Image (cartoon, rainbow, N blue to C red; front, side, top):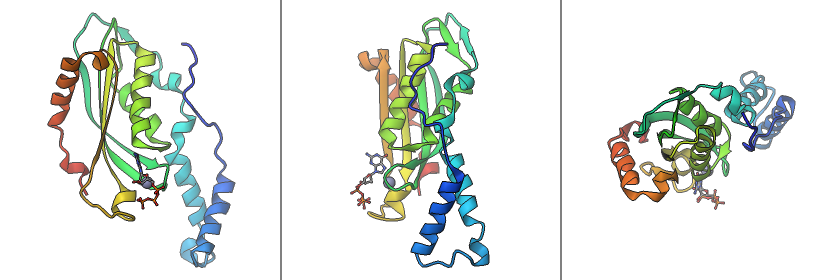
Length: 204
Ligand SMILES: Nc1nc2c(ncn2[C@@H]2O[C@H](COP(=O)(O)OP(=O)(O)OP(=O)(O)O)[C@@H](O)[C@H]2O)c(=O)[nH]1
Ligand SMILES: [Zn+2]
């Protein structure tokens, strides 16, 4: 498979994150030597490594050649893929669901690979719009289907626990490629399928 630019950053330095967290603890007036905080810098460093693992994910390892020939030409829709990401402005979580559809053009992809692509882009510092587009573009590139549609619905902690403190707002973003971009009937069909999704589970 051809190597493509998936905007990855390979390194993550645990000691540098630990030092920075210790600095923050001191800066907010905490005693970083008290028992409850002794291991906090290491825990937080491991947490950030986990939450940003998508920078170090290899798309080809994920796909693992699970692309299969198929005559099917109808829409394939994988709904309610749960994810959590970090907003790049505040480094606070935003979490919700992604819905991904494609129209095959000779090939289908292993079901689990779509949530894995979502995870790859969620586990980075993101804005929801870019994450939505990256998921769609990657599926469009690796599978080469007739079209791809992605919808992401989420709640942003940075708008809930701080700042505007709006507890009921959700954000919905879409990204369309190929036939979904060109054909508004196809787009409407996708929107209808995703309209019934259970939004309550991502309400705060
Ligand atoms: N479009 C978009 N905006 C986001 C996303 N995540 C966070 N934001 C917004 O990014 C903006 C950053 O605005 P700034 O004015 O620079 O930061 P701020 O002073 O903390 O802003 P407030 O949240 O309004 O207090 C805020 O409006 C956030 O709500 C996202 O995924 N997409
Ligand atoms: Zn934010």
